[in-house]
Structures are given as C-alpha cells and as structure tokens.
Image (cartoon, rainbow, N blue to C red):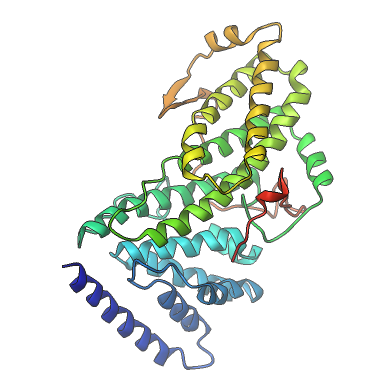
Length: 365
C-alpha cells in the first residue's frame, strides 16, 4: 500500500509540474513561475524536505514589487489549502517558516496580511487528516501542530512589533537594549507572556515518526530550534531589564512576572530533550540561571514570593504551566490582522540578531 501511495504521489508531481512548466514558459507569467517553484518544493516524497534552490526562488520575490511578493505568497497558500497530502502540507508550512525567518520585509508583510478565516485557525489546518497510510496519519499530527506553531509565531510577532527569529535586518545590540529599557512594565510583561507562549507551543512538538518522514521532522526541528534560540535571546534581554527594575515593580507586576516564570520553567525539561545540541550548554545554563535569579530577587522583596503566589487570583493551569488572567484576551490572527510596522513601536527600527554565546549562531538557508 505504501509503494502504491508513493507511486501515485510521483505521478501527481510529474503531471502538475509538467503542466505548470508549459504555462509558465511565458516570460510574462511571473506568478506562474512561483507556482512551479512551489510545486517542485512540495512534492509528495516524505524523504526529502524542500530543496534550497526552490526556496531561494520564492524568497527572491521579496526583491520585487509588492504584487510580486503577493503572487509568491498566494502560490504557497493555494498549495497549502488545496492539498490533502500530509507531506505536501508539511513542505508548504516549511516554506512559510522560511519566509518568516529569511524573507525580506515586503514578503513577510504579504504573508502577515494574507486573507484568512480568522481566529486561532488562521492556516485552517486544525482538522487536517491524511488517512492514506500509517505514515501519513502520523505526519498529519505534525501538520496540525506545525500550523498552530506558525500561527503563534505570527501572533507573537504582532505583539513584539517584528518577526521573531527573522534574519532579514539587524540593529546594534546597545541600541536594542536601550529600546527595550524604554518600554513600560506592561509592554515588557505582554512581550514576555507572548514569548513564553511561543516556547510552550514549541514544547508540544510531536515525536519523530518511526516509519518514515524523519528528514522532514529533522528539518522542522532545526527551524523551530533556531526560533527557540531567538526567543530565549529576547527573553534574556527582557528579564535582565526586569532584574534592574525589581525594586520598583508593583505588586501586580510581580504577580504577572511570577506567572510567566512558572510557565517558562514548565518548558525546561521538554526543550532540553527536543532541541539538545542546537545550543552551547553554557549558554542555556546561563539563561536558566537568570530565571532563577529574577525569581530569587522577587522572593527577597518585602511582599515575598510566597505571598505573591497566594495572591495569584484568576490564575489557571495551561498544560503544565500557569497563565494569568491579565492576558486572557491575547491577540490572535483574524480578518485583516497583520504584523503592522507602519505605525508600530518598531516602525523605524530594524531588528538585530545576536547570541548570548557565539556558539549559538546557526547556519541557515
């Protein structure tokens, strides 16, 4: 059955690529050339992730006009929303992830405003099922989780004002830290809350498939691991800022910070297993040491850590972590929602990418 499914997939790939190649031979058909690149990058073969040369063609849309970028994003989304094959869906999601990480602003912007049905099902894959074979059934759980994770990337980016882990721009570290220090406590807490939520979603990553598809899973783990490094860098800067402000935090701010730290610690064991080898041990140990230090400073304050814990009114459980009632109206992607830069707090500031340790600099596309 597996061989028959693979053969059918190969035939579909050849047919669709052949048809697209004939149509896109017209030099004026730029959108069709993107369509062909998407087809070539999203084959039915579970043993190969999208090739870099096809990803580069799609990322090149960011060097053109807004219409060109829109055509590339539309080609990817059409492929994602019309397929019933788990391999094709996963590869389409990998392309979206690459756009978030390595695409230029104009391409990222088109992705962020792409029409959607709204709510938490922005990519419309929460009910995805491919029952053709045991492998496809197993990969379907990866499709559902990966789509949810990318939705968290987009919603977190809306809150932060930039795409987390994007490599498309840079800013000097000192300037960035000065910018973070200018944020209000409420802004810092909201950003920490979003970043911790992203890490919690990353922890839900399924186990690597036993019967195939390992190369696809390894590719996704690598991409998400890079996001993890970036998210920890962002958290590191913000927790350091709160450490400097610890003596002037209000009681309510301390409660929110304790909630976030508890949720963050609930991720520690899982991420240490899933993403081991992606970072240098000393770097991640330094981060968790900072988390403990901030908690200790809160505990040493007059109100005390135990009193803060007893005062967590409206705090509920989310998986193995905690969530405060303060951010229950968390932003999600909906109709017309986007990562807006034109009027946001970071509208005139580029992002920077730096590591706590030089060993965390990762090879990308």
